[in-house]
Length: 97
Image (cartoon, rainbow, N blue to C red):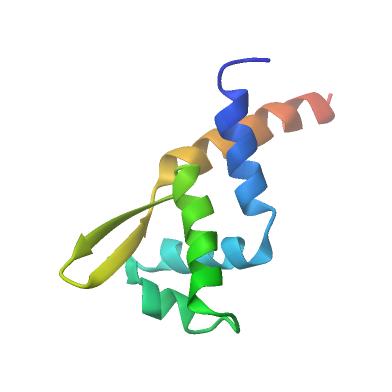
């Protein structure tokens, strides 16, 4: 298995969940990032459960966070998305042959 497979596996595993995909979409649209409370607002779940989703996204590198005072802000990190896109483009080339 190539060295990049494990991080790529974690990215696809993170994106397999609809809540996490929605968070990624919201962060892609938020140029300055978003606070945890703003990200959690549209979801009908307890904050600790939502924080677990953010932990998975941060663990695979899809998002990064910083804390200023009492507010933790999350931003999208595009590198893992680019790696997933490259993999899909490579696979598409095989499928279309």
